[in-house]
Length: 255
Image: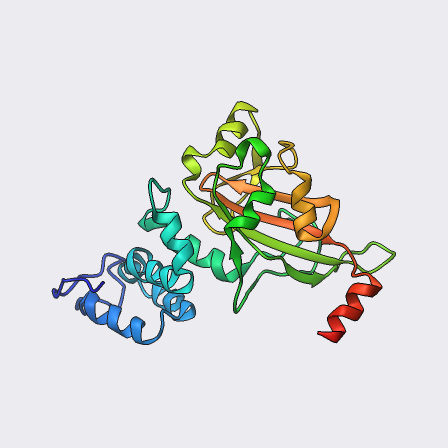
Protein backbone atom coordinates (compact mmCIF):
# COMPACT_ATOMS: atom_id res chain seq x y z
CA UNK A 1 0.00 0.00 0.00
CA UNK A 2 1.48 3.34 -1.02
CA UNK A 3 1.46 6.09 1.55
CA UNK A 4 -0.62 9.12 0.67
CA UNK A 5 1.86 11.73 1.82
CA UNK A 6 3.53 14.09 -0.64
CA UNK A 7 5.15 16.64 1.64
CA UNK A 8 8.86 17.12 2.21
CA UNK A 9 10.34 15.93 5.50
CA UNK A 10 12.95 17.63 7.62
CA UNK A 11 15.68 15.40 8.95
CA UNK A 12 15.34 14.76 12.70
CA UNK A 13 18.79 13.23 13.07
CA UNK A 14 21.16 16.06 13.86
CA UNK A 15 22.19 19.54 12.75
CA UNK A 16 25.24 18.10 11.00
CA UNK A 17 23.26 15.68 8.85
CA UNK A 18 23.45 16.26 5.09
CA UNK A 19 19.66 16.01 4.79
CA UNK A 20 19.21 19.70 5.57
CA UNK A 21 16.85 20.45 2.70
CA UNK A 22 14.25 17.84 3.53
CA UNK A 23 13.43 14.49 1.97
CA UNK A 24 11.43 13.33 -1.00
CA UNK A 25 8.06 11.82 -0.20
CA UNK A 26 7.61 8.36 1.25
CA UNK A 27 5.63 7.43 -1.86
CA UNK A 28 8.70 7.80 -4.05
CA UNK A 29 10.91 5.76 -1.73
CA UNK A 30 8.18 3.10 -1.51
CA UNK A 31 8.04 2.81 -5.31
CA UNK A 32 11.83 2.65 -5.62
CA UNK A 33 12.14 -0.20 -3.13
CA UNK A 34 9.12 -1.97 -4.58
CA UNK A 35 10.97 -1.97 -7.90
CA UNK A 36 14.05 -3.33 -6.08
CA UNK A 37 11.93 -6.16 -4.63
CA UNK A 38 12.55 -4.88 -1.09
CA UNK A 39 16.27 -5.71 -1.23
CA UNK A 40 17.26 -6.14 2.45
CA UNK A 41 20.86 -4.97 1.95
CA UNK A 42 19.66 -1.73 0.38
CA UNK A 43 17.07 -1.23 3.11
CA UNK A 44 19.81 -1.64 5.72
CA UNK A 45 22.03 0.82 3.83
CA UNK A 46 19.23 3.39 3.65
CA UNK A 47 18.66 3.04 7.40
CA UNK A 48 22.22 4.22 8.03
CA UNK A 49 21.74 7.54 6.23
CA UNK A 50 19.87 9.32 9.01
CA UNK A 51 17.18 8.87 11.63
CA UNK A 52 14.37 9.82 9.25
CA UNK A 53 15.30 7.09 6.78
CA UNK A 54 15.81 4.62 9.64
CA UNK A 55 12.32 5.38 10.93
CA UNK A 56 10.83 4.94 7.45
CA UNK A 57 12.64 1.62 7.03
CA UNK A 58 11.35 0.31 10.37
CA UNK A 59 7.76 1.44 9.75
CA UNK A 60 7.35 0.60 6.08
CA UNK A 61 10.23 -1.02 4.21
CA UNK A 62 11.05 -3.90 6.56
CA UNK A 63 7.34 -4.64 6.88
CA UNK A 64 7.00 -4.89 3.10
CA UNK A 65 10.14 -7.04 2.93
CA UNK A 66 8.73 -9.49 5.48
CA UNK A 67 5.34 -9.68 3.82
CA UNK A 68 6.94 -10.28 0.42
CA UNK A 69 9.49 -12.85 1.63
CA UNK A 70 7.07 -14.95 3.74
CA UNK A 71 3.48 -13.84 3.00
CA UNK A 72 1.60 -16.78 4.56
CA UNK A 73 3.72 -16.72 7.70
CA UNK A 74 3.32 -12.94 8.08
CA UNK A 75 -0.43 -13.13 7.53
CA UNK A 76 -0.69 -15.73 10.29
CA UNK A 77 1.52 -13.78 12.69
CA UNK A 78 -0.59 -10.67 12.16
CA UNK A 79 -3.96 -12.39 12.51
CA UNK A 80 -5.71 -11.98 15.84
CA UNK A 81 -3.86 -10.34 18.70
CA UNK A 82 -0.18 -10.22 17.79
CA UNK A 83 3.00 -8.93 19.40
CA UNK A 84 4.23 -7.56 16.07
CA UNK A 85 4.24 -3.77 15.92
CA UNK A 86 6.03 -1.36 13.60
CA UNK A 87 9.18 -1.30 15.72
CA UNK A 88 9.64 -5.08 15.43
CA UNK A 89 9.56 -5.44 11.64
CA UNK A 90 13.30 -4.87 11.33
CA UNK A 91 14.02 -7.58 13.89
CA UNK A 92 11.69 -9.98 12.13
CA UNK A 93 13.26 -9.19 8.77
CA UNK A 94 16.71 -9.97 10.16
CA UNK A 95 15.43 -13.22 11.65
CA UNK A 96 14.22 -14.34 8.23
CA UNK A 97 17.62 -13.97 6.59
CA UNK A 98 20.32 -14.12 9.29
CA UNK A 99 21.90 -17.19 10.92
CA UNK A 100 23.30 -16.27 14.33
CA UNK A 101 26.37 -18.50 14.29
CA UNK A 102 28.45 -18.49 17.45
CA UNK A 103 31.77 -17.02 18.47
CA UNK A 104 33.69 -16.70 21.72
CA UNK A 105 31.76 -14.82 24.39
CA UNK A 106 28.32 -15.28 22.84
CA UNK A 107 25.39 -17.50 23.81
CA UNK A 108 26.77 -20.65 22.27
CA UNK A 109 30.40 -21.23 23.10
CA UNK A 110 31.56 -23.01 19.96
CA UNK A 111 34.35 -20.94 18.42
CA UNK A 112 34.82 -19.86 14.83
CA UNK A 113 31.32 -19.97 13.33
CA UNK A 114 30.40 -16.34 12.64
CA UNK A 115 26.87 -15.20 11.96
CA UNK A 116 25.96 -14.77 8.32
CA UNK A 117 23.14 -13.92 5.97
CA UNK A 118 21.36 -16.76 4.20
CA UNK A 119 19.82 -16.60 0.76
CA UNK A 120 16.74 -18.64 1.62
CA UNK A 121 15.36 -20.36 4.73
CA UNK A 122 12.25 -22.45 5.24
CA UNK A 123 10.12 -21.84 8.34
CA UNK A 124 7.51 -24.33 9.49
CA UNK A 125 4.57 -23.87 11.85
CA UNK A 126 3.93 -27.61 12.04
CA UNK A 127 7.54 -28.35 12.95
CA UNK A 128 7.37 -25.70 15.66
CA UNK A 129 5.15 -28.03 17.68
CA UNK A 130 8.19 -30.29 18.15
CA UNK A 131 9.82 -27.58 20.28
CA UNK A 132 6.88 -27.19 22.65
CA UNK A 133 5.92 -29.22 25.71
CA UNK A 134 2.58 -31.00 25.40
CA UNK A 135 0.83 -28.50 27.65
CA UNK A 136 2.03 -25.64 25.42
CA UNK A 137 1.21 -27.06 22.00
CA UNK A 138 -1.70 -24.72 21.44
CA UNK A 139 0.94 -21.99 21.02
CA UNK A 140 2.08 -21.10 17.51
CA UNK A 141 5.82 -21.22 16.82
CA UNK A 142 7.46 -20.93 13.43
CA UNK A 143 10.90 -22.56 13.35
CA UNK A 144 13.56 -22.70 10.64
CA UNK A 145 15.26 -25.77 9.33
CA UNK A 146 18.79 -25.94 10.78
CA UNK A 147 21.65 -24.17 9.04
CA UNK A 148 24.50 -26.71 9.07
CA UNK A 149 28.17 -25.94 9.75
CA UNK A 150 31.22 -28.10 10.48
CA UNK A 151 32.05 -28.03 14.20
CA UNK A 152 34.91 -25.59 14.70
CA UNK A 153 35.43 -26.52 18.36
CA UNK A 154 38.78 -27.64 19.74
CA UNK A 155 37.61 -31.03 21.01
CA UNK A 156 39.09 -34.23 19.65
CA UNK A 157 37.28 -37.17 18.11
CA UNK A 158 34.76 -37.65 15.35
CA UNK A 159 33.94 -34.63 13.23
CA UNK A 160 30.49 -33.29 13.95
CA UNK A 161 28.16 -30.84 12.32
CA UNK A 162 26.52 -27.99 14.19
CA UNK A 163 23.05 -26.80 13.27
CA UNK A 164 21.69 -23.33 14.04
CA UNK A 165 17.96 -22.72 14.01
CA UNK A 166 15.75 -19.78 14.79
CA UNK A 167 12.07 -19.03 15.13
CA UNK A 168 9.32 -16.70 16.26
CA UNK A 169 6.18 -17.14 18.36
CA UNK A 170 2.82 -15.74 17.41
CA UNK A 171 1.35 -13.55 20.17
CA UNK A 172 4.13 -14.48 22.58
CA UNK A 173 2.80 -12.11 25.23
CA UNK A 174 -0.25 -14.34 25.72
CA UNK A 175 1.44 -17.69 25.05
CA UNK A 176 1.51 -20.67 27.40
CA UNK A 177 5.29 -20.88 27.04
CA UNK A 178 5.72 -17.37 28.43
CA UNK A 179 3.27 -18.06 31.24
CA UNK A 180 5.14 -21.25 32.18
CA UNK A 181 8.50 -19.48 32.16
CA UNK A 182 7.11 -16.83 34.52
CA UNK A 183 5.49 -19.42 36.79
CA UNK A 184 8.80 -21.28 36.97
CA UNK A 185 10.53 -18.01 37.85
CA UNK A 186 13.00 -18.81 35.09
CA UNK A 187 16.04 -16.57 35.18
CA UNK A 188 16.96 -14.33 32.26
CA UNK A 189 20.48 -14.53 30.87
CA UNK A 190 22.63 -12.09 32.89
CA UNK A 191 24.55 -10.58 29.96
CA UNK A 192 23.52 -11.84 26.51
CA UNK A 193 20.57 -10.47 24.53
CA UNK A 194 18.61 -11.48 21.44
CA UNK A 195 20.54 -11.14 18.20
CA UNK A 196 17.46 -9.79 16.47
CA UNK A 197 15.86 -7.32 18.87
CA UNK A 198 18.31 -6.93 21.81
CA UNK A 199 15.73 -8.15 24.36
CA UNK A 200 16.70 -10.34 27.31
CA UNK A 201 16.64 -14.13 26.92
CA UNK A 202 15.33 -17.19 28.74
CA UNK A 203 17.40 -20.39 28.54
CA UNK A 204 14.92 -23.14 27.71
CA UNK A 205 17.33 -25.89 28.76
CA UNK A 206 17.77 -24.40 32.22
CA UNK A 207 14.00 -24.03 32.44
CA UNK A 208 13.68 -27.73 31.48
CA UNK A 209 11.29 -26.91 28.68
CA UNK A 210 12.97 -28.66 25.74
CA UNK A 211 10.97 -31.77 24.75
CA UNK A 212 12.63 -34.86 23.28
CA UNK A 213 10.69 -34.28 20.08
CA UNK A 214 12.95 -31.29 19.33
CA UNK A 215 16.06 -33.45 18.91
CA UNK A 216 14.07 -36.01 16.92
CA UNK A 217 12.92 -33.37 14.43
CA UNK A 218 16.36 -31.77 14.17
CA UNK A 219 18.14 -35.11 13.75
CA UNK A 220 20.47 -34.30 16.64
CA UNK A 221 21.75 -35.79 19.87
CA UNK A 222 19.14 -35.45 22.60
CA UNK A 223 21.56 -33.67 24.94
CA UNK A 224 22.93 -31.58 22.07
CA UNK A 225 19.98 -29.22 21.72
CA UNK A 226 19.93 -25.79 23.33
CA UNK A 227 17.79 -22.78 22.61
CA UNK A 228 16.74 -19.46 24.03
CA UNK A 229 13.53 -17.43 23.76
CA UNK A 230 13.60 -13.65 24.15
CA UNK A 231 11.00 -11.39 25.74
CA UNK A 232 9.64 -10.58 22.27
CA UNK A 233 9.20 -14.24 21.30
CA UNK A 234 12.21 -14.76 19.03
CA UNK A 235 13.94 -18.13 19.34
CA UNK A 236 17.68 -18.79 18.85
CA UNK A 237 18.99 -22.34 18.95
CA UNK A 238 21.89 -24.69 18.34
CA UNK A 239 22.18 -28.47 18.04
CA UNK A 240 24.82 -31.12 17.44
CA UNK A 241 23.61 -33.09 14.43
CA UNK A 242 23.77 -36.86 14.24
CA UNK A 243 26.06 -38.24 11.49
CA UNK A 244 24.37 -39.71 8.46
CA UNK A 245 24.23 -43.51 8.44
CA UNK A 246 25.72 -45.41 5.53
CA UNK A 247 22.26 -46.15 4.20
CA UNK A 248 21.28 -42.48 4.36
CA UNK A 249 24.45 -41.49 2.52
CA UNK A 250 23.73 -44.01 -0.24
CA UNK A 251 20.14 -42.82 -0.52
CA UNK A 252 21.31 -39.21 -0.77
CA UNK A 253 23.77 -40.10 -3.53
CA UNK A 254 21.05 -41.90 -5.50
CA UNK A 255 18.79 -38.88 -5.30
